[in-house]
Amino acid sequence: MRFCRTDDRFANTWRSKGGCSWITFPSPRRVPPELLHVSLYNVEQSARISDAVIFAACRTASAIDTCQFELSFDHVATFRKSRRNAIVLSGNGGRELLRQLHVQMGNLGEDARINRNLQPHATLLYDSEVMPRVTLQKPVVVAAREFVLLRNRPGEQGYEFVDRWPLRARG
Image 1: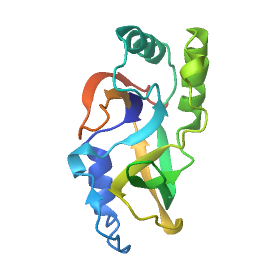
Image 2: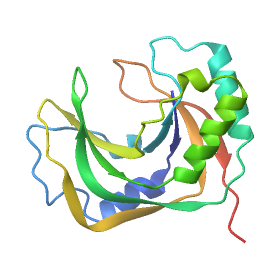
Image 3: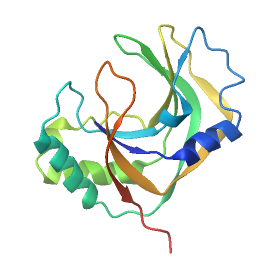
């Protein structure tokens, strides 16, 4: 289960910038455009997530008070995983939202579940190969206007929408 920034604008921005047409991927299993999203925070990774964890994540999200921001992705890299490697677009965006999520989860006693090493990213494809890190000539920048809680089930493609929270406009 993860907090993400997701909507059609991300997929449209990615496509308008040419996607990864300049990189050749070996036998990829590409992520369909409608499933593209930015993973900002992993609440818990297990086959069965309790209702209490979902409730705590929703309470945490409701307590977040931050402005809209831009996510900047400056490289493509491989996240090595046991079953299949994730080829991701990555960078350093979303740090304030991450910080607030960490604090709020800690306030609710859920800090044991926190993965402080999660790198904000968008998974582009899965593959058995490892791709070396490639720095982009120009970063891909997308606006984050909301964040959502998505539930993914190991071994299944796609996500279950849980809830969404708007970020306040800068003013």
